[in-house]
Length: 360
Image 1 (cartoon, rainbow, N blue to C red):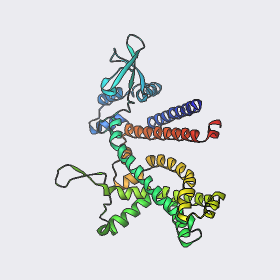
Image 2 (image 1 turned 45 degrees about the vertical axis):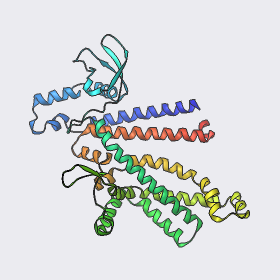
Image 3 (image 1 turned 135 degrees about the horizontal axis):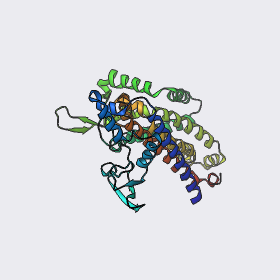
Image 4 (image 1 turned 135 degrees about the vertical axis):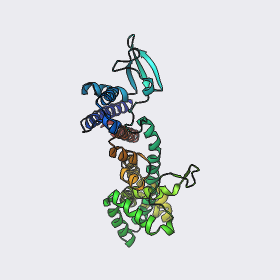
């Protein structure tokens, strides 16, 4: 088992390295000069040159790439003596850090939080921007997945019990529609219906984040109702998948011999389903849920932007509009690495549960 985990971690690190390389090359060949974006109308030759030097963009692309890897790595090498060095240890960038080894008289190895550069527009650290936005995206994804599982499993069970009924056929049709409905269209449609046409009954807002600014300037207050529409909209596609998986898995389990034996012993239909069939039918549903949760964390961009939910999606879209490349790079890297390690964790869990996976 340790060898299996080590192999998965090694594969994950290779994928992370590939993602870092692709993201760096992608955003360093895009048109536009970051220095001129930061200076705006105040841009002049000397100011542009000074900012490009501060950003390290006056160096060859290979050195820029090495510096980028040095910044995003939790363990990095720096020059602590010469402030003109390309590898100079700037404490304002890397705080907090721990010095763990000395390479030479002037170079040390430090352990730090990965440095994702600073925003061109706000000058804030990208890591701070992500730390403010990600909890809202995480909350949205968790609530969406919980909604999809609770409602989807319930409908899937009923569809399996009442197979070929009108309810079953209706749920299958709605599931297909849910899987094929684009997220951005569903968001606009739901906002229009439930927050505009039916606003007097639902009292929901078309847009709004988790915290709302008080009209009288007395700070912010929690607004849970703003979570309802984006969570339901984001949960439509996984809900449709959960319904299909639960129905097909339940039908397969209900045809097994041990279910017929349980019924022959006189157990009620409810007890047969809840105590025997359901727990054995949940394996494919849980497998799909783990993958969907990771996808929801990365795929909420359109939903967040349309509902003005101040999460990672809104941050990414705003940064793209302003050509704030460090923010976009940092968010893309964070989401990519998060997905990679979620997949590694799921693989390890599968390996613990099924020895055949470890052998393969």
